[in-house]
Length: 462
Ligand SMILES: Cc1cc2nc3c(=O)[nH]c(=O)nc-3n(C[C@H](O)[C@H](O)[C@H](O)COP(=O)(O)OP(=O)(O)OC[C@H]3O[C@@H](n4cnc5c(N)ncnc54)[C@H](O)[C@@H]3O)c2cc1C
Image 1 (cartoon, rainbow, N blue to C red):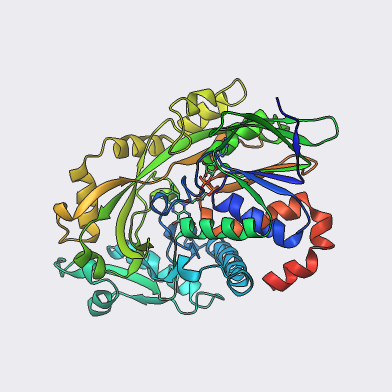
Image 2 (cartoon, rainbow, N blue to C red):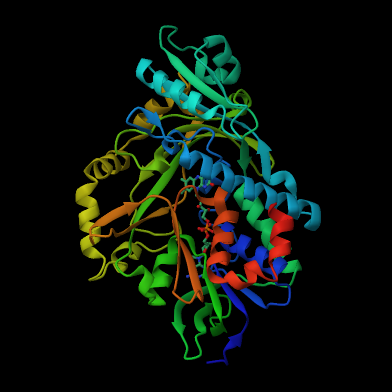
């Protein structure tokens, strides 16, 4: 075994989170040695890959699950929070465009629309619009039930539709489509140019504490088969679906009893360029009863590899893998004495979700296509094919009474001394990567954030 390779920071995972963390840290503390370890021979091949997510720059514009109606009142808090988090992402990306030549083609303006069917849902959308239109950041939102306006907003959805059907929609014209894969590639390029050591084809399989409070990360170079040990005072686990397993190996008390429940995704991808050209919006509908937040159906314009694309979905699926390229044993291997009871309790408390997932897994192509036809009535089967989306790991943890429940959002976890941190969970995901990484820094490096990093942070984010 070679000597331990020492550095100041080790980042595990070359997705959008690890890439963002590496650039932020290099800008704030250029003299630190930072090493990033990624198991694949390229970065951004898991959830951050372009086809493995919807590329929506989540901003609270169109996601109806961010604005639930509680006792007749629309709760806009989540939409406002996500809006301000995405604003931080935009500020950081603009800073990198101006200072570090970040290629801006990773994002495009695409209208964000919400679409509902029927009188009751129209009333909900109208209420939501009334609650949001005067809030900062949402003042350009428009609402309509007028079929002529809807025809202009999204002709594919309106053509050949029953004229008696009541539709209502909102639109925010300057929403974003973000190619998180391109962005991650760019962030890694910038980070490397600033001195970060990017080691691809390096699989991390264990993390252990050492007596001086530092961590040793055990890893295998998959090209040479060499076993390596890296040591650092701070480790960030940005391993996506692999994060829970690694944090468990580090044995930190803060995640005792946590379990992960994998939910896979599939899209219907349009293969006809003439159809793709006729749609220019991200149109979000309402999730079915019991569906997890990731399963809100949407008809999405995307920009991938320099080309306009169109997808519909996602459809949920169950796989026991925690990563798209993971192992079928991931789920079973993650179960232990501490987390099996919360897992069972969460399952019992979420029967509609379980039923929804079973229905989705059993769905044939024809059934998926029937869902698409609700949004795009004149769709032709030959224009569409099913493609894999990424895996998400929903976190199951104990509430204050010790009962298990499913947590749908993203959760930052770190140990008491702030020497190891990681990111668990799914939504709203990549769009909030900048605010999530800033939060990690504030929690783990509070003195730096209020001290020598403050003026740089202020200059980027104020
Ligand atoms: C169907 C679907 C739709 C989505 N839509 C959106 C959307 O519209 N907008 C949005 O903002 N977000 C969306 N998301 C969420 C978003 O994709 C994720 O939140 C984000 O990509 C997570 O980034 P990450 O860096 O944490 O994980 P990843 O991109 O998965 O990166 C983790 C990296 O760690 C590496 N890794 C794992 N284990 C190890 C190990 N042991 N050793 C070394 N390396 C390791 C992996 O290979 C991978 O490169 C969607 C997700 C899904 C599944």
